[in-house]
Length: 453
Image 1: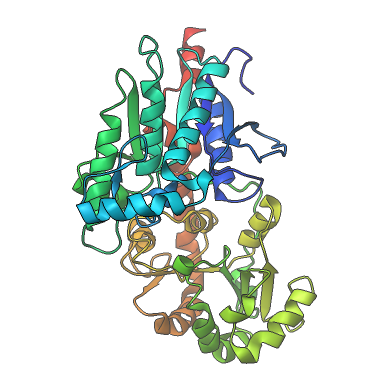
Image 2: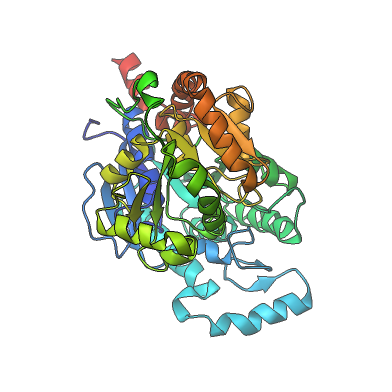
């Protein structure tokens, strides 16, 4: 516990609208790291957040969320630079004209100028009403180029006699694949224009992967690569005796609700490929999350009745071939779901994850779980860090390789899991939340206080 007069670390994330989801999980992890460094954590969230969080004081502040809808990165829909008032600038006259015509037809609350003003007002509310002190720190958990315009707008309104230092964490890729897009170049220009407007204040930019830091550098933006934090598991005894595992199915976990970039379109074909040769034979079982609605489009026609039966039976297939969780899981259920994994399977689009971190992969790596991941992206780079392909799992170029790789994992499981367990310790030390904050340059006031005592 931190003392009552400890400096505060303010976490800013308008995307937190309720309990559950990776935005709140990231905030909770950073809050734990802040406490370890001697800070009292606080989280500014969306106004609709009206629930209690056991470990974190949450302040409902923001009237808007999902600022990245106007980002120039791959997760945004913009193709034109803007100023801090939301007006299209730069680009071609045609692009500017198109956006000037389109913007007024957006819903009022998501028009660029209104979103920038609303986010700026929320940030200023935190600074002015919460009486920020000299040693308090501010971290914007989920930043992007558009949000930086709002931050610059807010900082320009503050008294420069009390300069602030703000840390902004960038997660989302600027471009897909290997070639810098025209939008990515505009992204860099927009970020640098924003940071040039902050006056006496200081903004530090951080990227959650080395490849993302490289993408930013390619467009003229300097950002520190930091390790994405992950929650350690306490008292996890999930690993079964290797001898008995030869007689039982290995549990393949496909974690997280499927989205387009997370392999939603590949699920049907992969299930068809492995059903007869892997699941019905008893060598493997598949545990996966599916949405409560429209899950049928992700499942082959001949397996829909099997899935429906499992979902009607609390997610369990009576013949132990499947576990099907529908909808979001709370924190405890989600962690138990991950704890059940013997193999982690990732169907992610490598183009989208070329520079993007996967928190789910890190959560399985710290559990010592062998994994199967796509080549040519951040996920396969994690295999390289562990010793290369075949060290703690395998990578594939085509999903058609997955059945053979699963057979190989079954044969090599004893060696793979042993190496994965050793690598888990290294991963957990690197991706500890306190280490994330230290890498960002946030001082350890707990150690400083101990030395002074």
